[in-house]
Length: 454
Image 1 (cartoon, helix red, strand yellow):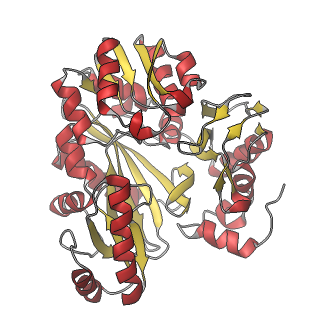
Image 2 (tube, helix red, strand yellow; image 1 turned 90 degrees about the horizontal axis):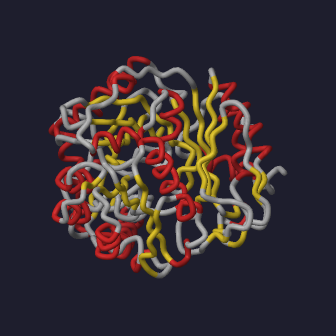
């Protein structure tokens, strides 16, 4: 079993991993930038090491400093969390060369599935449906135009590396395609150091459905159902739920089998997620694979009664999947709201600053994953998410009611947050009816055209 784990991340996911370590008897080592000295993950870890200034390229993305910290702390494993270096194949290789276990898939699997174009080709080989598109990387605008004319507009230009909506552009005609092709390449090069893009058919206002996979070194690969991530703005998820309101038993079976087949085809190990686009008639198309734990993993944990982070650590220690995970069945409905330090009334402008009052909701079926507290100074250098509010209940209607109650209790002052917007979504008749897709939030904001309800 892993004895000493260094957590190469920050904030709530670092704290989440620390809690799993404490329950497994693993000593946790936090790393932090100078801006994060007051973060809870630093305070609650067994040890903490500063790795540099606030900017990520000088701290959380600095492989040599993280490895040095691991060697100083005598760590035998590193958990990358999500974001930063979590899907960096080179980082996984460096860990292996230093005899430090990387808690995640192999560098080969990360490289294969982290490149969206290569992942698409693997999906095709495994018989998983994909949207029509280019056969590989598109090098010139002329080639982009030829592909688009063949498959028909609208199309999506997508970076082969990275994620989070960066390096993606939708084009409805040739003029916007040429502009989007160059801007996507420029953005991808700046964000990921790789300008390569490919083109695929754009599915208008689909449902964004992802399947949670978990695989051990003994050949066991299972899925733990789906999460619906369609409530999003500019490809950034805001609310997720499990199970999806559009799912049928037959569709879940087909999508789950496709997800497991693809994971087996690339010899995948540890936790990962297959993301799909689903249209209104039940056609599904492979989008990408995330070779890491996801932000929204808690709703799967609440529905299936498992601890995915503990499973990650046990798999990395060479243990097989737990019996209850191999035989897990859904037993609740869960919803997650990402609480971001942003102002929805000012184009979602980030709202860093010091939290004056922080009161988290509680009661039955309510879970908070957060590193925030009263007096915590939110640094402006990182992602704006400061908490995840997760609820579960016996039915979807009960989960929505519980989330409304919990959001109403959540008090954070001194900064702006997305709580009022999420409370409004929970009161929206289309959301309550389960009638939403990736265009839902933009339509809701346009139709409302007024300040958020207090």
